Length: 289
Image 1 (tube, rainbow, N blue to C red):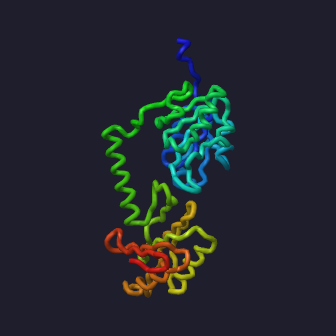
Image 2 (tube, rainbow, N blue to C red; image 1 turned 120 degrees about the vertical axis):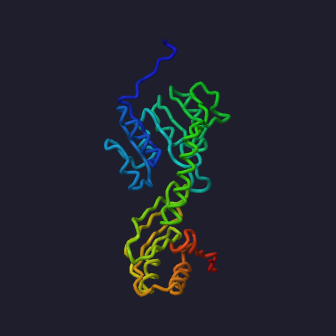
Image 3 (cartoon, rainbow, N blue to C red; image 1 turned 45 degrees about the vertical axis):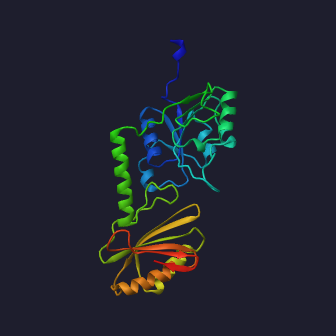
């Protein structure tokens, strides 16, 4: 019996890093078991925020979130390159862990600096639980490595396929972006009658939104509703514009070309007719449709 002693999770603190669909669900489930929840997500969407438990404490940094946590759950995508998430749980973050903290990593192995985690496990009574084994940690006495079987059921495979199809369908038909690893989550309510929907991808630079709206204003187009979200170097816009006086396709083609060739704009799309058509791109100063 003594070999299998543990500790209760009720009353313990869980830090959830990444509060998207999975992170929010993790926070809710942990709160229902009596855990205190802290969370961090610099890109927290309204949709995800509404799914969080009321008792959650939001932190302004990963270091702040983990500093008082007994358990830490990583729920963020793995993004390579500059400004990405490779090794984001590194020596600086791990140094803020409590000596007996438990890190739960079922996102991606590359998010954690294995050497820094090994040093942490060597120096205290902490634990690392993951389904992504690597050469540094797979046989460490402080590591608990599990099979990567989270989606290995018929029901999970069906649900994943349906989610992927619905996500693409929403983007093609409405311009909605969900569950993207490199674009911001963006959604706009249903298009009002008498309007047409435009989407614009641009560099995330100061003044870009003003350039886009000015281009539409010069074409005497009134924006009925719009949303603008950014992630890293990219910003994404969804706009519904009044079609009064602009009912012919030719005029909208001209407006789209002007919009697409605005400095800093990368691509645009007019959502009409067959889903997925109406796309235009600025290829190094050349207009491509």
